[in-house]
Length: 254
Image (cartoon, one colour):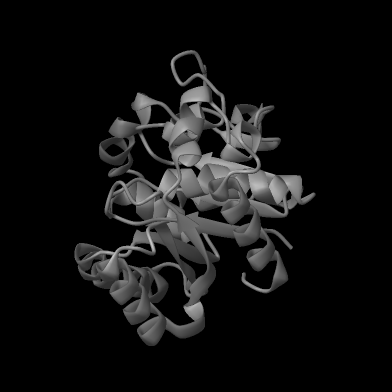
């Protein structure tokens, strides 16, 4: 059975796209068939997968508008060894244009039904906002992964996101659940980070992944080369952490 995971946090700069790209590559190297859907108009997941957002002809925008079939839009990321539904700046207008559509929150879900059986995992990189694009991601997903930094404001934003997930579950997607909270850019020398991490584990228990993603220079460098960190420096702490996360997911989560 295909597992669809939305990777989301309305707060930007928390490692959401980094997680989407590197988890996709780590699951793929474990022998799984993986599709990454770039649902963010910034298209960083597209570029991080080695696909030029400036030259790609059809994107997730055309799928949501009903102008292209999703199976004709997907491309292979030779750098990541997974398939990708790319994005570019056109996607920024989708939210306004979809307002008049019936079942506008389910456009992605309906599209994915045509290709879901081709994959073991489908990862959806949602934009850093609680908008109609994110709603499409949440309606299409079985579960949600929340990457977050261990800082004070992250806890405040987490409360809003959990409430949004509950509303989506009640109104659109009764099976949606929080699959896990992922601590990213973690510096164990930071006392506040340790305190927030302890609070997360206290309140969310086994919903917090055991794997912790460290601050790592190689993770920051890899997108500039259009590569997942696994193929930029596979021995780096960042690469090893995402491989560990993939194994944790395969072993029991989702």
